Image: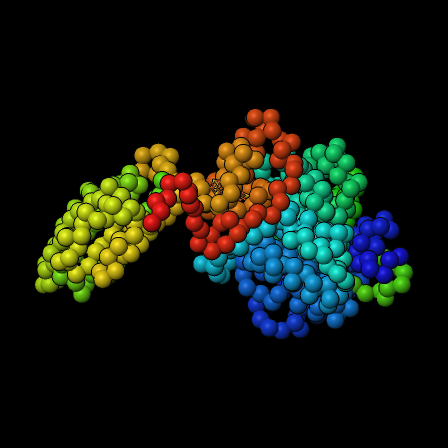
Length: 315
Length: 223
Ligand code: SF4
Ligand code: SF4
């Protein structure tokens, strides 16, 4: 085993069905909550995403959050968007993140700033997510900066992730774009939250036709939706998310909506685990992190695997 | 063309509150076409200002003039006399015109009456849309003649992002331009071209590289 490889990459290569979680950094300068969440998820998730100013709201930086996860003994997946930094700042932050022990990077465009708490800010997008992926890969494999200048020593060697949204339009384009991301250097994917299993099946079918499941590790994104009210809200206001009516109905009818939410999420995970080409599940429960262990347990995903040579930690 | 929109009247009135005689200067090019700074708008603004100031007990004298173009010295020369005896000039041209006026008449206070929006055109009567971000290196041949630099909310060159839904952008009330680019490229049988990764753009050719210039030596008149 290469000492450079992240725990996440190692697990994929061992053929494990990987479980990742997500922590939304706070709107404050304390990492205590992040460390607490990371400890809480330990033993249930193999790695944890740290979002990068999600929905364009200023939060503790994803890289610093990743360091808090490391300090709590966990395995961070740091998210990096193209919204707020130009190529100079991105590369500088990548050097910094790697120097601090972060090995997994998830590259994405980022929500437009008009959604967040600083809608009047400038919109950077010097590079897009595809160019970002390619840039990170070239830094690692060709040892060059984006400008072509050589990185003389200690290049950052990230395990490169990307996102895929099977529920955005146009539908066919979603698979092409995933392929384009793989060509650019993406090694693993986390999908947008899946509610519409049928559409996801069709998406995976197209992905398999193009052999994408053999060229990357695809993780299916899920989310326990706490109540019918939350589900209704998401259907209405969250872009790129297909929330089916029968799920909202099912939650509405349930005596204990939270228990039902867990039940639905567990059913989804069990289903997704059997979809050919799905190599793991990414559980997004921001704001309800404490439910993750229950879901992982009920979905039959315990115990989490060990990585030889690495202490049994997670986060 | 340059698309511009008139500032709220109160703002213009506030900017000239200390002056008693103003020249309201229109432009006969783009801003006439987009109905924001042509001869007609000059007349309306002049009348409104006079009325407003009369009500406020500090009457104002307005001089009206509309030039062929404000962004060319030779037309500005025509108003030298008019400029002499006014306190300030309200330019109803785009930002380029306003600056040419200020540069040509360094002793005069110049006020912009418009907010310059974009390079675009009228897609229907009364509706103007942005089309070009003036990036300095056109890539329309790669995107089926549809510009992602100016028209994608994130100026993504390898789109569409995950926010595209039913032809709409994740940003409210905006069409997803990548949806249109894909449909066009597919219809033209050029999908393979979109599978190629478009590399990082050279923004030094855009405004990011500092103010830009263009020169044509063969038409320069030597001293
Ligand atoms: S690619 Fe550049 S020059 Fe061409 S239309 Fe778009 S912004 Fe204008
Ligand atoms: S939804 Fe379309 S137009 Fe909007 S940012 Fe994404 S790719 Fe650009």
